[in-house]
Image (cartoon, rainbow, N blue to C red; front, side):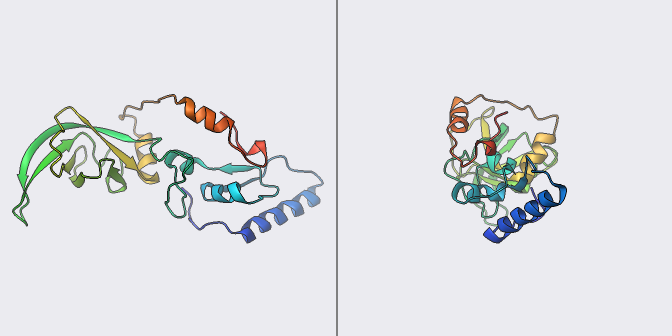
Length: 199
């Protein structure tokens, strides 16, 4: 995540290219790598000529599949490339003390120590987060009666939650190989093949 999330403009790209040209003239050497932007420039890459810029740092967009300046999904990317799964430890009926309405609460095995709880959302849109402790998250299942103790609930993460969770050594990470991603990278059509580095 960058300090500012302003979308780059055509003027920004022009100024970067102008600066690079001036530096190259001054040193008498053509620079091989011009790292000219971050995830917010991916839409520019797809539709505009970036000139001398031949490298972008697009980690957040690749991990989350969204335009970082608008948080809107980018159709050709996965929005669920990384998810957080929590196991249901307990399910019990509860009563809302303000409305006196009953609901079914689930307690799952993640909390503030594991992620930025305020920056995650259940992927089942019927479920609401009620609150959290250091190691537990309380959920309102909103009548979703099919959940049982031991089931897993998946959450999407914003960048802060993602980076926090990836740093936590106690969270088990599972990497799933997806051949569709390899195909996407091989067929990624950009003006310069140097734009996509396959690792």
